Image (cartoon, rainbow, N blue to C red; front, side, top):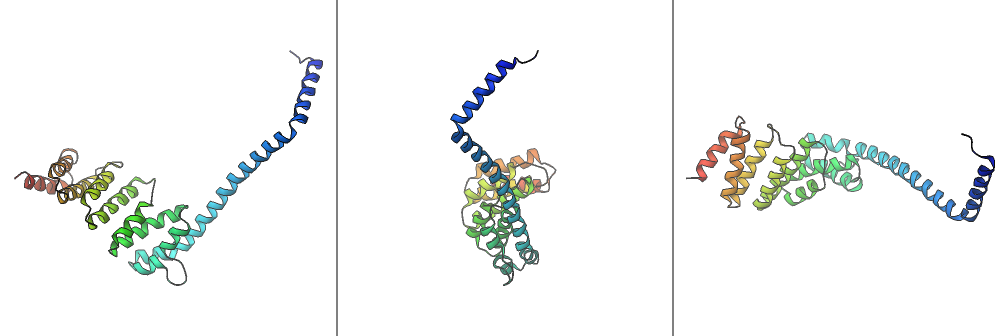
Length: 217
């Protein structure tokens, strides 16, 4: 059960010899590991600091956004930066990512539809309700840009992203309207049918039924 002392001594001697012969390589590998680990924790610390700074920077901008003061919300009030700058400088942080969503909504209200689409396209969220909303808003922007087919695709994406009885019927209804605008009545009817089949008790069902009947006349 015990290790042979002579065998153990020979093994240690071989190990020491291996270390002496490969000292440079081993030190380089060790240095690389230390740098990688240190870099990982350093980057996470830096990113956390950046996110804190972004949250502080966009605090006033969000207040202006909620008050519908869109210009200072987007461009800043002269003291603190607006959503555009926060999104640009802190885009890799959670706060910077959220700034893209706020900015997209504000730009959409201002009628700057391409800018709104671009801002919302940079946004992503694990919250399925917010992400679906972003897809729908991007669809609104595309529809205003006279791109009904692209808008319909985005409304469909919103409807299919974690489908639920509360918001999906509304996205499907918007998809149907966009498909009608794109002169694709067959696909529009399918969107309305999905509301009638899967969300028959929703508020949108009555409108979907009327739209389908109108297209089938």
